[in-house]
Length: 510
Ligand code: ME8
Image (cartoon, rainbow, N blue to C red; front, side, top):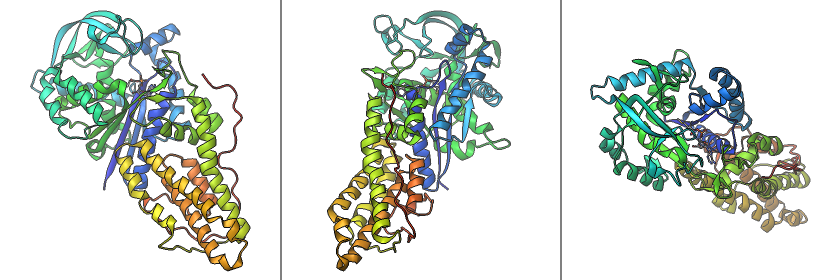
């Protein structure tokens, strides 16, 4: 049985979600839904990172205890996947007891691995609370963290260090595998960072009451990244009560993340795993930034596009999912604009796909009273168009090519539209001698739309179900159905209602 385990980053709860968080969450869901269609046992993990200093600060500013604060705001983070049509197999909170216990065991395993990988020292240096990361002078621009545009704070404290420097060779060996980190240019970035020499880093913080206590020194708490990264493993130990999923899913673990947290995932995390006696993940994919102007979309930079949930209210989850997958080539940076969403909604979802469904169903209703018998033909041009689709899309999605796979499906949508124009069923309908020809054309279009609906199901789960329903086809999403000639006979098919009706938009632009 092939399995698939995919994680999103766990997001900081110092604020509510924005479109950048929706982006990774949607992408992860598309990959997992697709693998399920191919019959793979899959597990999608997402959740929140609660023990950050910035979270404690926001709580204090609101006069709340950190736990009280996170218990409140976590609801808006749970709503994010739910409203985007994403149903994670588990939603982790780092304040879960199961997670806290596992982090303590994990750190204890490293300390007792016989290699002296954890030692005490004094950290004196800079810390960016935005990144929750220690910074060196050369990482700053004009004395500020370039990511958050703020000066880091000076910290001097005695805490526990992890001997990352001892893992250079073992980490480089992971990068011998060409696809350990994708895209390849990100693998090169991580590899050169490792080659440039690794500094040990602090895995605990002194004088911070909010966090997971270090088991052998409860006056200190785990550094937020040494706590958060472990979620990918800890979740598997308690997501299902009485069941440990580590053996089932850890060997096939894949992490999806934004490029901002590449080093933590591609360098620190595999080293911590090796030190604790676990295998590194199978694969990591780092995508780019959604930008507003030339800056990353971010709450702290205050350049938000719009609340993702407002966009869902207006356009529906499918439209937001489509826009995430299609507006920026996955892996690259790109502009996320609400204008772009509106434009794609109208032109691609409304016209290319929605009108195609309306036209095809209306023609079947009108010219054949809604009844059609299967009439596949091996030399149909539609057969040739559909034949390579399943493999092409699957290969792209296996490589995390979210945008490329969708474009491949859209080629078929466009081809079906051209087929309507070139065969002109309204002309055929005028000539009784061409009745068979009309049957074949209509049936091919029906079958093509059926294939498109199944191929698109991972991206547009709601629309896909509605298309299959409008076509009176079974709701099965089995990937083997993405093949020509499998549509079933239809009876009493009616013209479909618009799939993506016009939206009158209030002011949502930046
Ligand atoms: O870094 N464009 O949490 P975070 C694209 N808690 N993706 C974006 C984005 C943008 N403009 N803004 C955010 C953390 N993201 C840690 C992670 S994991 C063990 C701990 C997405 O709330 C993207 O996935 O800052 C990015 O990596 C993540 O949100 C950062 O979320």
